[in-house]
Image (tube, rainbow over all chains, first blue to last red; front, side, top):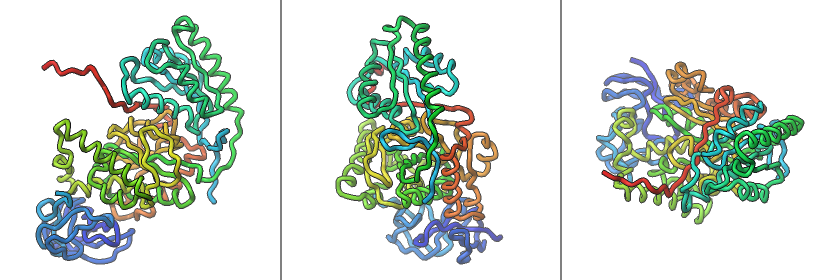
Length: 92
Length: 392
């Protein structure tokens, strides 16, 4: 299935899927309305949830809106669902 | 230089509306003041939410906010109706307002006038005179550097941090770039972003004040046994895709744009700095927006996911959403549909330009949907509530 991922800021290493996505879906990454890459989704991902746009290693920051929104608790590959099971709040 | 049309005040400020308001200084005067407003076309009634039994900081917060209503550049003149025995008396309030402005301000008390009918008679005559005077005031051109834009969000959902808030951030940056001012608040929503906001504060004092309001609120929650960080993001937020408190809060603060934070204000306080400012306001939308209207904001952009009908007696409120279904269901309440951003059909920059263009139209007189209903919700935030004992 085709579909879209929204990148909010050039610094972001995650983007939001704009429709429910399934493993193997090749989605177009949009920034400022323009397509800039294709990412293959690895997990079933609900609409508005995040997938990695770049590899994120354990303890590296997850970046959205160009700001730090959390820390990876495990290595995350491109296309993987990024959520509470692999990212935690920076303040503990 | 973009110019808009408005009304010049003696203090050098400019309003985009020319309102005459009638404020009750106590709940006991509400119905009498409301009858006056029903008599006079265009007179705006502002109800009082409290009366006696106000103590501590709550008294000053209420006085400051009511003073701010009258001082707002959108207001031509004001009438205060009191009862006569309340905590916030109409005549000292009139004195306080008149010490800060040359606008016409009248006050009376129902006990002194001799009941409702005499009060209505006197206030109706004054209101008609003020509205006639106001209608004669010509509009003049002014540039956007005189504008203070209030921003607020309410009824948020997963689309809020995706489309309307970041797009409003673009519009906020545009307004600050031409010398105007933008205000955001909702301190409850700032918890978790203090490390980011602190970095954006223009100086150490501003940073300290930011941290004071955020940590102070968090401490008050803790004293009540509420763990704000543990409760956020809520299960519903998580289902919507929000993973951390920072992510949730960032979606909210994105509406203020990216410029430095120049001042941190008390609730209802008038800014002394230009550019982006933060006001310490509560999470209840109407209280938050009311505080901003008292600070002199001439208009407000309100972002919503689920939709809301509210308006404000002092300033037009532009409602925007990124949720297509909400817009379709509530298009008599919501002004702008930014769901194109969510669909990937519109960029955030384009959405921001759309908001900015609409703001210009509203300044030039275009009615918002809340204005067309004549919705004037008002609620003044108060702390120090007493006599609410738990008998269980």
